[in-house]
Every structure is written in C-alpha cells, then in structure tokens.
Length: 531
Image (cartoon, rainbow, N blue to C red):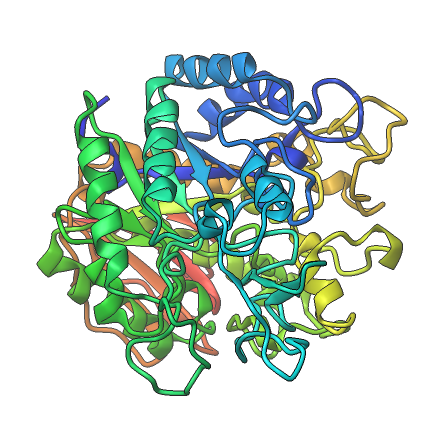
C-alpha cells in the first residue's frame, strides 16, 4: 500500500441500506458489509466510500444527520463501524466516510435548542433564521428555490423562518459562525482517529451564504450560496487537519459546478485532494461529447496537480444501463420523468463499453454498488414505497432516486436474493426478474458484467501503463475514441454505427463485446497491448 493510492484508485461506493442485510430486518447494515468484504476484495477495489451511517430520521436517506459521532441502530454500532474500517484495511481496502456539512437533521440537538430559544438568541445564530417579508412576515425571506424543488424556507410558530436548501427536515448551518467550523473540524478528527482514510464532502460548494441572503439574480456574481470564496478558507483548514495524520487522509468533494475552471480551484494543493467529475457523468453517449469532457477534465486538472475522477453513476443518478438505453443518454436532474422508454439490451452493451472507457482513463474511478452487476434502474416501484423527498417535493412529477437504491441481489431465484434472510421483504422491493443478475449467477458466467469488471480491475491494477497521468489520443475514425496509456497500452471505444478494424499487431487484453473478423462492433470497447 502506498501514500499516493488515491491518485489512481478504484473506489467502490456502498449505500449501506441496500448493500447487504446482516440481521434479517430487511435493511442493509454494517454486519452485512463486513460479511461481504471478501466480495469487494475479490472484485479488486482499493477503497470503499460509505454513504452516511449516522443516526438519522431518514428524511433524506441518511443525509439528515442527527449525530456525526455515532452509528444509527438501523445499521449497527460505532464499535461495528470501527471493526469494519479495520477489517477492510486488513484486506487492503481503505474506508472513506461521508460528511454532510451543509445541514443537519431537524432532530439534531443544535436545532432543537434553536427552536426552543427566542429569536435573536445564540442558539439560532448557528442556523439561518430570519423574519419573513410581507405585512405580517407571512412571506419567505427571499426568493430562493430548494435543491429539491419548492421553497427553501419553513416558518416556525414564533413567526421566524429557517433556511433549508434541501428538505425542510434539513436546516442549513451558518458557516459564518466559528462554532460550526470548530464542530466539523472535530468531526474530521473523530473519524480520522478511527482509521478512516478519507472523507467525502456532501454538497461541498453550498456551505457559505451571502450574509444578507439576498434574492437570486440570474448571472449575479458572486452567487448568494453557490461556490463562494469563503469556502476555500474552510477547506484549507480541513486539509491542514488531514495532513496532520500519518499516511494520506484524503478529502473528496461533491462539487456540482458548470464552470470547469472554478471547479478546479477546489483542487489546489492545499485544499481538496479530488472532486467528483460530474461533467463526464452527464455527457451523452457520443464520441465528440465524451472526448470534449475528457480533454477539458485532463487539461484543467493538470495545473493544480490533482488527478481526475471518473464516475458513471451514483446513489443520486439514473443507473447507467437504463440511461444509456434511452434516446437522450445524457443526465440532467430536470429531465427525469416517469415512463421514459429505454432499451435494456442496448443500454447494457453501452454500459459495458463505458466501464472499459472509464477504467482506462488516467486518475481515480468510482464504482457505484450494482454497476458491476449491470443493474438497471427500477422504474416500477409501488408509489406507496417511494421515500425520496425529491419525488414528493416535485408533486410526484420527478420519479426520485429510489430506483437506483434498490437492494443488491446476491443469490437465489427470488427476492430477497440473498440480500436478507429468506422470506424477508427488503426496505425497497426488488424486481421478480433479477435472478440472472445476482452475484451468484454472474460468478458462473464468464461473459457477465461482473466477470468484465473483475477482469478489468485486475488488469488495471497489474498493468504499469494504467498508472500515472500519461495519455495521448490516437488517430481514429469519426465516432471512435482511441487513446494510448503508457508504453504500448491503448483503448479503443466504438461509438459509431459500424464495426471498426483493430490496429494491426496488437494483443487483445480485454473486450466488452466479442470481436467479429478482427473488428470491434458498435458500442464496444477493447484494451490492447501493442509493441
């Protein structure tokens, strides 16, 4: 294990509620993850990022945190989390925990105290409480819109309003208050002391707000609550804490910003180590679009010395197999809708090629649980089982994110497919036709998505050409991506409508689809060793 592991790591995202159920109550837990650590080691990942496991009312899938220094009984105990971090490391797998600094749960002790205190009290200064507008304060303090849709203000009985950029159960913290900063610095130390190799920072560009909380004006610079300069001082202090620990403890930002140059400001040497590359994720399955994203990403990361990250899907995004089977293969939260047609066979074919593309690029790659199984988005969940606030705050027009959070299928021919004890109903229902997608079924199939990911991750770890930042585009036909990584190692991805010949005198290392007469079929990818 080496200190710069994070620069080219394969990092697996575990959504604990849906990974594996160890106690048979229908909800995934830490005992389930611990039991499945050999699977992750066999898959060949370097680290695991865990979505929040803290005590929470689960108003937003655990991102409404009531206590950052404990584990929700739904998942287990703090002692089990410590065991999990230790046991994973013994298998060569580092652990990254999720930190949610923009907001807390409305059940957090700080917010309960704020509600009990009077307007203008010190307790309310930890949040954004304001009087309303209108004759009797009956209107929200400003015209902002929640990230989940609707008004981001809720009025309390004494007449004041509090800000929540997400659900009403997630009041925003006031990061201009020193106590908020001190608390989160202590939380970082708490998890680093327990062996965490890094933290993923939720909604990393939203913490700081204009103190005046003005109305939103399109094109206004600076934005009243996105990407404000005050954030960089916060992350420099976090980096100093991370650097004070032995080895390397990394900071990974969830930074959704359309301006790529401003995005890379968070990656300066004394700030975050890496941030999620959502531009690549959002691009459609088109050669020119993907090439433009790759070029922009590598060009902008180079001056700050930070590695790029590549991700196809996560717990907030429509699963790759489903998205790539649609007419519009890009991703946009605003475009999500019920009943969007998809071609699952085409989507799977493209997802296999995309796997080899993303794993061949220089930098780190994130793999969301179930992507290695080719799981589709579950789009026919009963309405009464949906839990995502994005669905409810949209008035039911947005399908929400539950469809990519359905529990994993491990074995067997019917639900719960080894996720939980036989006969137990998982917290979200699994489709009746997932028997062919279980880990057990795919282990026995050399042509499965799981077999492809295992082979690709093994080659990626073994081949020196995949390390470092060497990258060079090769001449190719329209609709084809071809590039070299290191001496003699290359990748070819065919997004055109016709098969394309492979370059001569090369050894085929891995293909996403069978070759036909030495040609790579459309929506196929291949890794080659030449010379």
